[in-house]
Image 1 (cartoon, rainbow, N blue to C red):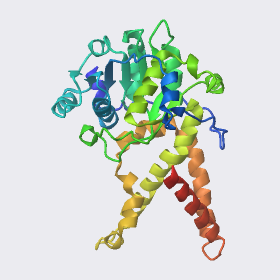
Image 2: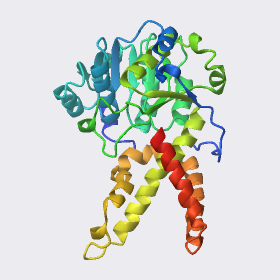
Image 3: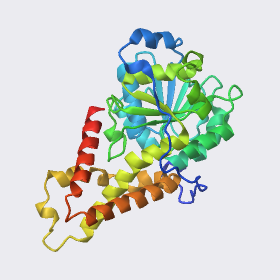
Image 4: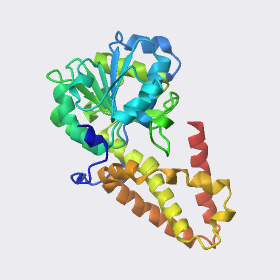
Length: 343
């Protein structure tokens, strides 16, 4: 079992995704726990049910989630499951109370919350086993960067109350360098945290919030404590949105970085005259392919459409180089930059 964590499966080849929506109408709901009205929050929450959390994958995301629980909660026992060398690092950093490697059964048997922070391909591979082994009282959630394939697999393998309850998730937080050495208790603070619901469930929120499963309410309370900002949306909507604002920027940084690398001369030009602006623009280029392989594979339809649209915009910019029409593009970009800084 532990060998599955050594590398993402080279044979992983997701089924084709449905045709991407070019401009879907997103049904996005911000959970009202973060408007400062804690009395309203507390009225929505059931008694806290999560006292034992097992984190599968204790790298950047899983390790950061464990550190955040350690810092902002006082009553959660934290277990980790990963390769032996990673678990050893987690113990040294006091990230976890208990560590497991190898078979999953021991790691899952006492968990109230099972937090999957593994690559997408490994997660898809393990979901059937997790569904079989997880206690029925537990909430299982993942942190994968694409959601449609995960949601499809979860629907096939989880059927509460016969099994544990599954809740898809994706913290919009990370760094270009992965690994437990980069884990940070503050990683999720003020970051959007996508939670996945069916369209019918989205239509019922917020009116149906009081009827939400107590395990989900307990997890929302944990997210409140670590400072994340939950957003409810559908799996396909999520993949479209993150394809545009996360995955496309990554590929744009890769394209610019590889383009410049291919044009280095013997004196290191043009990089030797680069200023901080280029470093800022290429921060994402420091992320390894191993982190992005499954993301690209499971969101390739959306990415292909987004790259086509982006390429057309570059063509438009080239046509406007001798025209004041280029100013409109700068103005639009400036407005988006201001919007991002205000969030």
